[in-house]
Length: 348
Image (cartoon, rainbow, N blue to C red; front, side, top):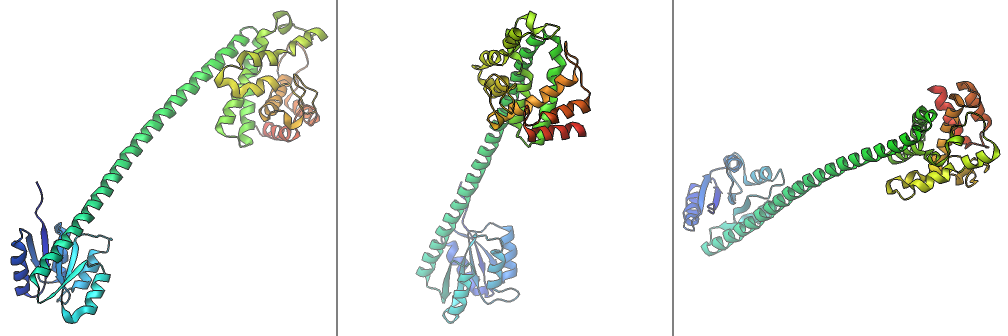
């Protein structure tokens, strides 16, 4: 059901108020009356008017001040028509600058009054439609934003579950190697800890850190393809056995190269035995042609190998191991990353 059109008439002359009320009610408009701007302003605060007809010169509060107070919050409603005499054209101009829509001159021309009121009410309708449209648009944007946020939350949860699943798969692959060679069990976790510390110190993002962690877990996965008599031999390997052992990075690479979520760890698996001076294997890469992840990992791997019990070779204490890394800086290891690793280990 349509709401009736409500009009407020503000004028200190009771005869003008009565005349306008009678004329407007003939067109089925509902009219309220006020004798000054202050009283009119209070009614505007309490009632949703479609149109305000106001005189300019009034006691207590004039029409200018009332319009100013109405428009303080950039409110375009209700539409205002000024009532004024012909001699007040400058004041009419000022009122329109302050936000009035139109004016009617006294004495009133009834035909002109009807046209002006209808024109103002049409403007009011357009303003209300525009406000309603903006409100609906804002509500729709808010609803879509909430829906999008919920979708993002679902995607984040799915992504987290997927990463957890990937990590479980990686750990399971590592467990297959550990089942054959128990010496690697704690080695993997220690190296994982060291590479994460270095990656964080270098300011790498979360994705890069995850890649390096996963690479640390899987770096020796290719040893699954090395026979037990070589992999578990208690003494040093001979030349032939050593050449076979050196194939484990390529074996590991071939094992996981077609696993989509493991493609990012391939540089570590394949190149973790490269040396900064180019004397490593399997590709003999040199300096910064060695992937950053592999350069970081090789330091942590070498440090843990030196400081852990192994079937052969002496065990270094922490200080001796760091001295050895420093000595091999620029030959085995990237000197910049070696300095960072030594600093981290000294502070830890």
